[in-house]
Length: 80
Length: 159
Length: 374
Image 1 (tube, rainbow over the protein chains, first blue to last red):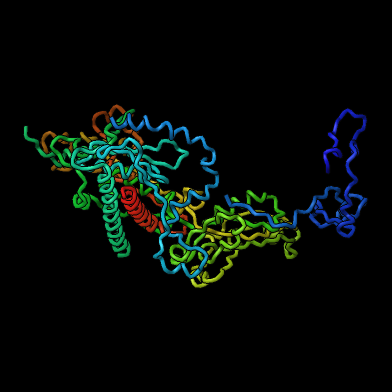
Image 2: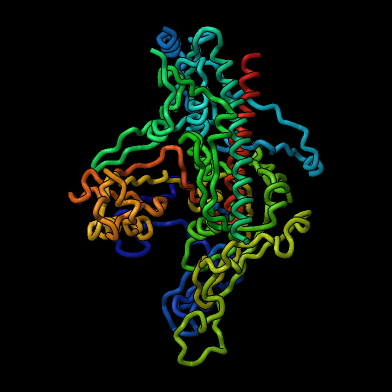
């Protein structure tokens, strides 16, 4: 994002809630990975596939809290 | 007074330690030199078996400015109270030594200073060398006696 | 005035650190040349050999206790410090986390893994394995790992529901598979010549297999590999070969005047059990003039049985009835060590290694001093 595109979010600008500032066109994550993103159900820990625009809800237990999956990359730490 | 002389010459040096490059890093990758007594492997795996090659060691002992033959201060790098106090004791046991003390000038610098003043007839450097030799002899005695006592204990414990 | 050599009694007295109600006396050693006029006290290896002795009290792999008698605090302290900070051990140093969906954070998990003590074949640990040093060029780091400086470990655990569990089961360890991750789940992956040194009973393994690393719930997973390197305690406590390495000075309890009857029993209660024993005043005791036992034959008297067990709590000095009857102290040259190994070394071997280490240090520095003069 270039500096011109970025707009400092302000609270008193009349707009409330989401879409308060003109972000660059949202990246189509779903499109990139074949239409589905996986999340973890917060209740039953099952992997939940979600399409773009689909209701945020676990198909198995109906819980509405879903977590992002952890990165697939290896992360290195010092054992200190 | 040799001590005063040493003080006078120091400011030039004291000023130089604001150079931040010399500040110790938190991970201290280089300062491990002291413990790497036998890490002499380079890239070849075969080098491991012959232990003859001794890496050219860095000079860790330095005579501080202002020292005279019979009254000298030494600076040891990468040494601590462990050796400092033991060395001080054994040098103080030398009857030719008038004064011996050690100090760690600053806890975040891995430096240990030893001050030795001797009577006429010997030098501070000789006293230091004798101290280090005596310490080695002492270690031999402790080691021998320890093994002896352990064997004796094992014999009484099993019988 | 010709100097009289000190009597044996005087020499003994010089060794005692006085402990009084609120103060201590004679703390520093005085056995230096020039301290006592006309006395030698210079370093003499033969005199040291004659005066020095070691006495073992306990010698187990994980706990050893022994006394060094006849050496200075500076020497004893050097050995203690070396045992804690300078004897190398092998410990987990780098953790490569592929996946960790457990509730314990990556860095906390890594830290916990680092602190687990490991054991393995002594020959391999002490002679085969060498230091690993981070290459100056960071990009070469992957070319710096060899079988003689790096030990590789893996930990792969996944928690799942246990279908065999009883329907009303509440214990998570039975309800789920791998609900707890223990040190025994760590798997050693030998490379190169490590097979030769670390196989069978000599394999690299945690000293205690029951160390709890993390807790999991179904669906959570830990998948990581680890590198172990050699290091010393001065760098990080996880490398310290000892849980504790400490010494204390031998307590001295001197009963100056008889403590008899009910007082003797009270006196014994001022000390830990076994320190003070209760004896009968014998005929010989009572017959001794000026001993204070006259006319007390058959009564109970307090005698010092085992001063080593004393904690020098000074409790006896608080009671007026024992005033001037007892003197407390410690022997300045009697060090009672307690060394508890974490398991990689035998406890007694750690001390011997410390002695060897101090000698090597002195040897290296002697060369350095010669080099400095040149």
